[in-house]
Amino acid sequence: MVGTTRRALRTTVAGATLAFGVSVLIPQAASAQPARPTLPVGAPAYTVEVNSPAGSPGYVYYSTGMSAAALVPGVEPLLSQLPPTAPANIVRDKSGREIWRYTPPPGQSVSNFRAQNYRGERVLTWWQGTTVGGHGSGVDVIADEHGNIIETLSPGGDSSDVHEFRITPDGRALITSYHEVTADLSAIGGPVDARMFDTVASVVDIASKQVLFRWSAAENVPLTESAEAGKLPGSGVYDPYHMNAISLDPAGNLVLSMRNTSTVYNVDIHTGAINWRLGGKNSTFELGPGVQFAFQHDAEFADDDTLRLFNNNSSGFTTLGTSSAQWIDLDLGARRATLARNQTHPAGLTAFAMGNAQGLDNGNTLVGWGMAPHISEFSPTGDLVFDAALPLGTYRAYLEDWAPAGK
Image 1 (cartoon, rainbow, N blue to C red):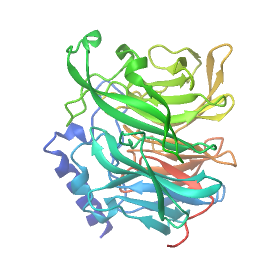
Image 2 (image 1 turned 120 degrees about the vertical axis):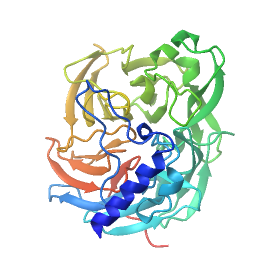
Image 3 (image 1 turned 45 degrees about the vertical axis):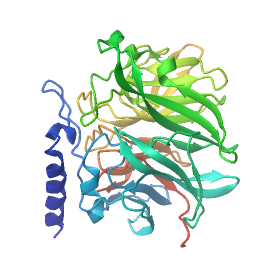
């Protein structure tokens, strides 16, 4: 029965992509490249494969379904009809037992499910909406510990994008949004009147819903920094930046990850000026041995001097190596970046989209492998102490020390 379910899932996914070309679902690297993206179809059901006592106690938070961040256009409606891949927010204990589930209304997706703190209380948060060209159009949701929705949020009159909804200790929200605009792409060999996505970071006061700060990639980052060669399959709009994470540095400035420039930006939260770039074509830092990442997600400071990110290392069409969770020490004075950790999966997983890395209190790292359908936990020395296989990938995964109460 398990084998039959797996074959049915793979057949359905493959069949869903034929109308768009096989490369839409499983983009292949060039023949000269040593690595290819991991097949984004995994176990027929959530399956715990490693659960060592050295792992952290707690509960795994993740979302099922084809996330709006998956860069796989056209597949979501079919997959939403299959129970293992239908959209839902799920909490499980480390043994794999389901503790809690939220299912959105028909036609809606959910993603980026996690626990956060708001006004001194633990809350559940997620994004909910529909897919538009590799990003999301919807709202960010705050629910109480029972899962009752108490607030929805978007940046001003814009829709909230799927990629980031982070609550700061002082009650602000960091939110991504995308805007289709007309742009002159002649600097990179394109037409003068092309359609492209600008991607925006907003800081919003949750209580008043007032936008306190707005930062546009198109207004601040030259198109020549993009590594995106063309349009996403299934979309007629060019996406040169693709912001996928917003966090705060120790000084309160914004840390922005842009997948399609392979760069992490530090932005002054008062002036909007770019303080520094890490990686990409114009890195401010000298990159030490092993500091190599591309098409990354979830960049955030682990401490005052260390940046942690999920290194996809693949866009699907270009693959530079296996994916990893990287911890990078930054010497801001000398402008030098040094690799502290590079944690890879023993199976050599390579995720061509999505993914995150969460630092845990005991020094371990929880990794959501994005389109490579696994959730893992590593010790500081890189030992795999927990691993679960999923039917499909999840945009991000988190380990928390509490689970939602029943409704």
